[in-house]
Length: 359
Figure 1 (cartoon, rainbow, N blue to C red):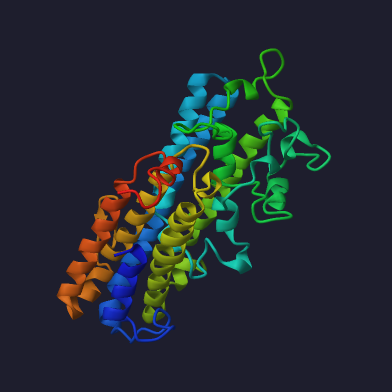
Figure 2: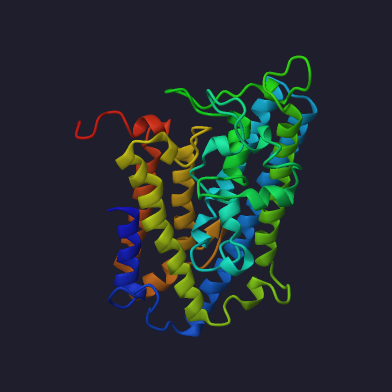
């Protein structure tokens, strides 16, 4: 069963009604049952965003160290810090798709500038055969590099014109992936000033990497703080005032991630098109990590846990109504995780070999 099928099974079999609006209109769950689950979800979200921000802050420190002393060693450390930080971020994708702080259009849709993809690399920096492309190399398009200017450029003129967020940082650390067996190999000398530098506009590139990383931290902090407990007026203070609406949002988030996003955009589209540009983290070749941690994030919401913290989750509501369905949910969620773990890395090669139809 696909990930989307897992959530359809849950929503149709236990907490939802019938028809196209099943996710939006589940039957009421008594507040006494729903409240512990809804509160634990808020704890999971805030805690998960805290872990995410810790990892991103460590990455920021590694980027600062790299820019202070560019070398293959400091670049490798910054790349590994990016990979480590992404693990925690990917597990938070299950908290999207219902107008929460990360993707509230009225608040500027932070997710769009945090994690937009796929990315047209030459919008930001040079690519093969185009050494003068990108905002970094065209000061007439971006005269002064500031955080505000970077945000303003994001998706300007097209949805693949990504200027900010995780994947811009990824591209600036790895460069294009031109290898069939490994990630991009941008040299550290792209960031060396003067003699020894290998690309034009090293000073602008250095400033861009520093500021786009700073902006990422600022946006992630905004999202985390919106879920901080005990803060009057923030999103967490409003969360759970209507427990059934909160449950609907929880289900909408995991249903959308499991279905349209993870099973669809992040796996099926890449598999159908066999296009490396359609894999999530194409520069670092860590797409399988993205998929795995998205699936773990779904499991975390169902079980009400993050890290070593565990509490009442959707599983308790399901188990009270249909113990067999709860067990099937647990089994299918774990089976999905195990299946993703079995995808060989790098993902861009897994989607083209062996040829479709081969046994």
